[in-house]
Length: 373
Image (cartoon, rainbow, N blue to C red; front, side, top):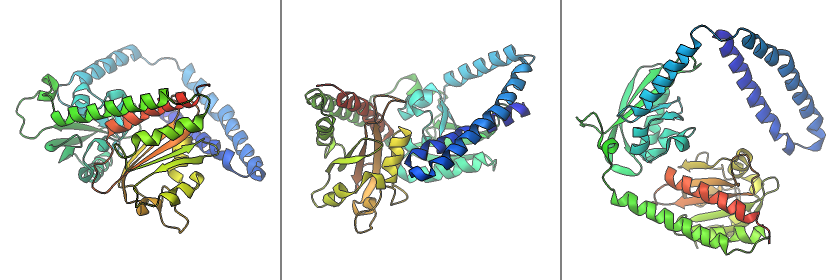
């Protein structure tokens, strides 16, 4: 088991270094030789250490009782999924490892979508910092914790969150088990598990997202084919006002060009339009990773770059919540651009459900941009 853990850590370090080498496309051509030497060194590392280590582990063969262990793991997964209380497994940063059906029903998230995203994102902004702090303390093995939080889609209903540390034998780090339950509930099976009572506010939000998706679909289907720029220009018109206070569309990933900026009439729209997307760390990171980014009270303030006067764009625009989404036909596909959405003032922050809706729309936008005339 110790050899397996060491091999896993070496492999994880190798993957991280490869990810850093992928950024070599942006370095000056004169420095490419240094990056090539580093890449060759990593290949030597694979050939001389990782591959022999893999062969050594593979030569040991399956350990005694492997079948029994796998059966036990399947049983534990089934118990976890059918457990009547909402439970989730997260790490010290509250990133979801696993979510059972009851927790998915309570939070409004699907298990597959929640995995890899912070559980703190479903809480109200005022509760997220405390929840992250308590989860980090539990992960540091400082004892179990319990606190009252509120879900973003049901801020009027307090939920008791109990956090405890787990130490799985095949995990190198501590995992945090989170149990969510409305306080004072005597019934061991929450109402959300037995059958949810229709929520008018939630139904209204879902209807609004459906109407927004329909409007985006109409705009994309009626856009002329063979002209990605004209297709992308229609997107901000659908989202601006009804969904976001600011909508910024940047085309291309390697050499991004700012196509459209729609914002408040009294906002620095001209300054944001004149900004080079390559100077926006958040835009470039979203294009590089191909994954959406959702932030509430964005930090640092210059993550979206600065204007010509040197002032952070997020500060000048009074941004309280932002959503950056890559325009790509699917995971691993080419990134056609980046869509950045801002909300300002007292407007509710972007929710995980809204982020999911924009993520789906971004795939449709990418397909429409690639459509021939």
